[in-house]
Length: 186
Ligand code: GLN
Image (cartoon, rainbow, N blue to C red):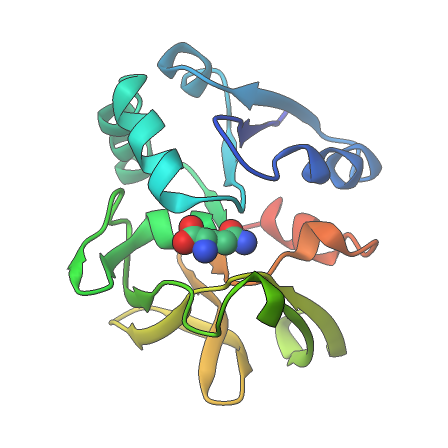
């Protein structure tokens, strides 16, 4: 039976639980490297990427997590999670550096500029899906092998490379389970 890990160091990890329950999959909140060995997939939630990066190091999880990702662990990074997965963040080397993308943090403005944008997601047969952006990063560059599944204007907002996917918005805040369903199949 598949166990989905929810990185639970900081941020909006609890909001994923109702989705995972509806998808009838087991989950485990991951707060140490032991727990990393007991999961088959990992969701890195939205929150504050700088804090999460710091905790990953402090709790000796950074190297084990990088190793598991290299070995093929499917991972979904949401907003701050997509920042942690990026190769380059605001011109500097990223934390997990698992996706060949460059991002700019908080590129659409401050918390008060958070907004819903309607996006089309052909791979999920979704039209005008209401994507919630909260101090979202902008993906400025996508490298080789990265598929762009959805964009906001010209900016990619849902991307995937093999078993790693990233959304710069927060699907867990919507009722729809389409992103969790999709992630369980990557
Ligand atoms: N602005 C946050 C960061 O830089 C991300 C915000 C979010 O995850 N909603 O980490």
